[in-house]
Length: 200
Figure 1 (cartoon, rainbow, N blue to C red):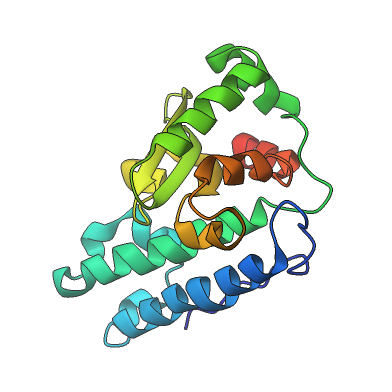
Figure 2 (cartoon, rainbow, N blue to C red):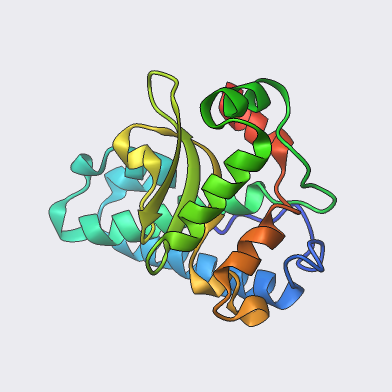
């Protein structure tokens, strides 16, 4: 059985940038639902139950066709949310560190330029989805967005950092102003965790 990953901080820990009520609903309702629906999809497939959500979305071809869409959506939702929540924290923000900082400078120019490009991709993404900094197998960094609960993992890329673009991640505080939620997110983004993701 897949279980809901516990957060390493309290729901109000990211105030004022992310409000406590949004965090609580996001984690206990939305994320929990993806976990529950993933377990339901895998109920009759014990050979798949021992695989993590990341393992499931890495190779969806091994998932039977009749449950593949449910697994794609809900394992993706689980894996993406685990990464998203893990990359947030109180008293975070700032700028990239270590090898990631140098790689971002090389790929996108000064950090402020990277921020502008990432924010533009996030705000410009149509409907629900996710914004990512990811790395191709050859090492190239990409800013990309994915629809639904898809992940760069599905295309063989490595996620470095991620931002939830679903309205449930920001609507209580920012309503339709996705750009404001992106601005707030920079203040709670854990660059140390991003560096760990980058160096592997």
